[in-house]
Length: 173
Image 1 (cartoon, one colour):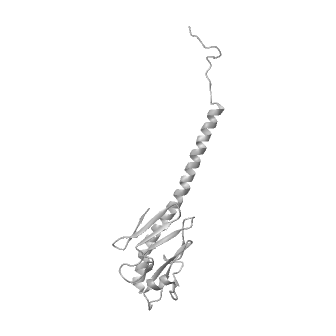
Image 2 (cartoon, rainbow, N blue to C red):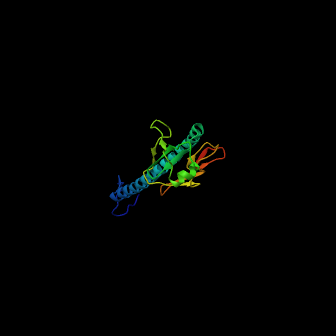
């Protein structure tokens, strides 16, 4: 003979209470907000890495073009983007020194169909670009020239582009 507690019946509750539903909705909201922040910051890091990968491919092309033409190729950059320019063949000073001083005469841009055309950065944030050595953004007809290290920073992420011994560039996050 079963004994029941007064006030309780043998009928089982079906469904969820309002409090349980509100707790589940709050948890879903917190997880969704966290996931959207992670995706957004991951997208900036990915775009910065893609820019570095693109430069790792363009730097050897600029080196090859400088060797083929005999004219120095300067890599010019700012917060908005970058471009490659061809300097005249006959310079009185070394190309890196002239370019570093800002007195590079009559440089010419590459056409819009060239791989060395002007491009904008993919990142939505403004970039801080550091080049080592400071005047190393000029490619000339020597076997290995150009920057040894380039760091791209967007405030949250940093990508490092470093020249290996063979003249190729490696990207490290």
